[in-house]
Length: 138
Image 1 (cartoon, rainbow, N blue to C red):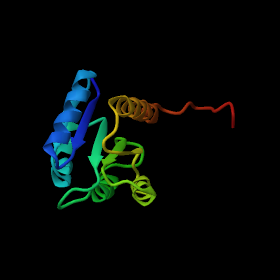
Image 2: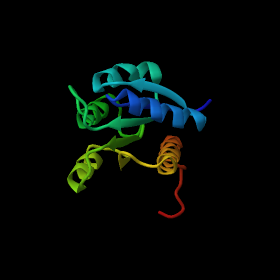
Image 3: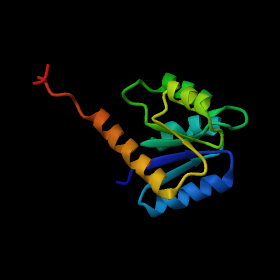
Image 4: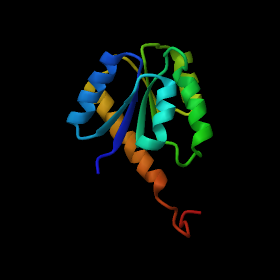
């Protein structure tokens, strides 16, 4: 089964563009247009990855990140890639401190997006694998 990506952005054009890119690459896609809608879809959609806009009315992406930490434990939270038009080091640090896997400034290239999506999904799969009983390097 194809990994599922939940796209969360208040701009329908951005959601549609990301949906087309990800669908053509073989990913299943779920969509939300607000932070609250994202949180309400989590149990039903069970995404493997979340693409999350930071600047949204009502509930910001950072507030969504904080809510995700209360819903999931550290080992089961899907990776979150923050996508935002808001650039700068301060915004990047805030997003990463909130627990994001990666931070991208919109617009970004399709190639860069797909590279990071693939890496985030590989990271997520690696987190799910159990550690061996004995670690030779310890």
